Image (cartoon, rainbow, N blue to C red; front, top):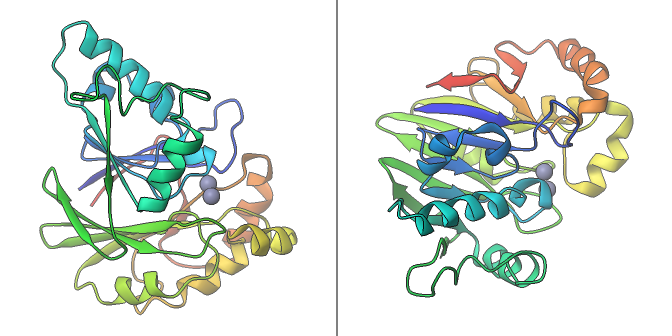
Length: 260
Ligand SMILES: [Zn+2]
Ligand SMILES: [Zn+2]
């Protein structure tokens, strides 16, 4: 399994992209930044988007990815359409508030209803979907809107992406049930001084992240990668994360590619 970080920040600043990970070249986990981080050729290989939730920082580039794909297909290129997999509530939100022909064209009906650029596939909590040789299971987490993390399973190797979350339970139960868990990407959004904001917005501070990780049976033994840091507080957070002194843990950066 190859996970390329396209964006790993919970805010957008020059040089800091919003959340998106490319798995095995064809599957996106969230879509905050793929059109900023991928060439047109790389974008053409994307067949699936697994969407954790509908906050703008995770859906923004669905708009531009669809636009680019649509143009490519209209120019005669027979690339696939893109399937967006998410909870039904999230797909309804996307259609109602984003791909609604007001904010952006409804690419689930364009260029035609019969052969649209985007198609939507509802997934159930804890249902496992297999695409392009990867098994993906959505696991509900703790955020102010419906949101799921994802368990990725390929061959005999598993990996967990928490997505945006405050303190949560089921994700860690499922993580602990995996025979060969090779790593975790976990929310770490705010410095410790912003605990109150983290609590009401469904995110973790450095301290909260460290407490969450202790729910892992293999705490301190498997690699942990932090994402969703607010870029303007990165230095403070780096010191706070360091102070937690957890082995095999680090903040992700946009040049990272994880081989699992
Ligand atoms: Zn969010
Ligand atoms: Zn977010």
